[in-house]
Length: 166
Image: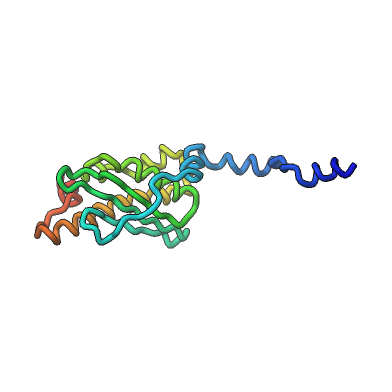
């Protein structure tokens, strides 16, 4: 009798129907990137090959820092890192963004749109601001990197300005 009571008391509870229903709000890709985020961390912001984008959404409290490390010879992004304080959709959007920018040139990453990230993660309309933060973070990181390059090289035209004029 004691063993039966102990098994009932210490047995792993079966998830209720309410818990199972809540999991359905997020697509499996969001859950995967939230549970196993890629490229979490940061680089030294004073490194001249690193661009840092720090963006936030005051309405929901999400804050996203995305950093890119650029090979100066090829102009390609060789690594990316992020730190995000926010909901699962914000963390997943940051994680996807760091995966997508690796190995691409600066001009290419500026073409990544929040709609592509949202579509990939199947974000609901109420969470679209998370993908917008990721796009803004990418642009801010590129702008920061180019500002560092311009300061050391004395250049004035940035990739963002070049893309905007074409």
